[in-house]
Amino acid sequence: MAKVGAAPAAAEPLFRQLMPNNQRQRAPYYASPYEETLAYLDRLGGVQTLRDQLRETSVRLGDSKTENERLRYLYNSNESSSLTALRKSLAVAEQDVRKKQEEMEELRSQLVNQDYEQRVAALQPRLTTMLRVQLSAIANIAKSHIFDQRLSISEDIVELRQMLDDVGDGDLEEIQKILEQTTVLYDQVRLPSDCFSTSFGALQPLWKHFPICVRMQISRGVVVPSQSDSWTMTEPAEGESDFFDDDDEDTKQDSEWQAEMTAIQNTHQSELETIRHHYEHQMKVLRERIEHEEARRRKLQEELVQITVSDMGISYLTCQFLNPPLFQTRNDQSLTTVKASFEDVLEEQRTGFQEEMEQLRKEHQRELDEEKAATRLALEAVRRAHEEELKQAALKKVNGEKDRDVTRQNAMLEQMREELTNLSAAYSAKCVENAQLDERLSALMEERERENEK
Image 1 (tube, rainbow, N blue to C red):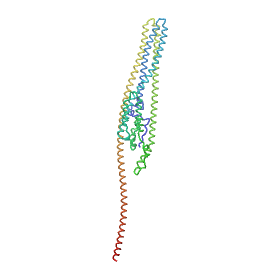
Image 2: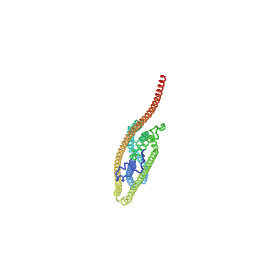
Image 3: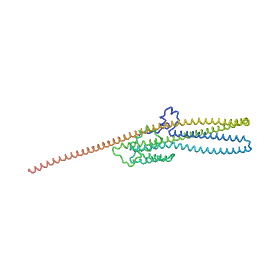
Image 4: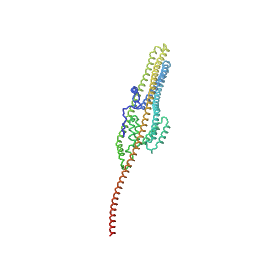
């Protein structure tokens, strides 16, 4: 039996090996296209969050401008109730601020839920495609008569395909059930014992390119010769000692196969831990970025208030009584300048985010195409390997039947030769006995003749 080694944890995935060297050095390392897709969705969620924060800041700037104009009017008015009205307006402004904070928290929670729904919408087609490929592989291998002929899995495959077609958008629980049933279907698969060694020998060059879940499912579908119906077998007859020697050799290598499965499971667990740490680091970076943008927004608001207050303080003494229109014009110009600069920053960030998203989308599509092409090549190689295994198994069966017929004929000839030898010996003894009887008969006849003559 060919020894199948566990995939090394440090090996790069197939889709990264097919990338050009310069692009591979620039691109960040991801263990799989699935991980890179999640990272891309996380970046999209961070961009959307920044856009919402910038839009909210623009709205707050407009509200602040309106409130400043109203407070300025109340401050410049000569009514006796201006102070009371100003206090009331401040109380209303405080209530508005609290209300805006509650709305902001609600929008943040909705944004988090929306990010999860986007991930589900992006991952569901890939999971569906993976399940369809697995079901098609099971159906094709079943048609090639590699599995036990008494096992009927065609109805189960049709039922799983129907369930897969009826899955609704975002129904991950149903997809999980289908995946569990597909795994059970893999567990029911059993390979013949004489194909056990040749199957893994042909798959050894391609084994490291298969995903962890597919390797474990294939491993669970293999029948170890030591688990067959050996309790009801009788003692082997002559000519069958070589067959049982092969079974003993496969049984000895079963421990090695169990060790390899354990190594694959450990590698899978380490990959899961790596992915979890990677996403935790990404979440930490996004939180820091959000805090940075929030601090920047607050700083801009404080600068706006300081500019407005300084303009009002400097211009108030010189322009309030001498030229009130000029006082109003300067305030409007300062607010317009701040608003224009803030809009320029927003436009620049928006353009940069759109260019980055477009570039990431193109790179992701190209990597998906490369992965599809590599998967087609791997499936074609597996199909050819299975065809070669079937041919070798058929030749081995024909040669075994011929050897058994020759052995049987040689045994029959040997038995006939022994019977002929025994018959020849018996015939020789009978001939000697007949000769002795003829001599005695001749002697008696002569004696009788002599008596008659007397």
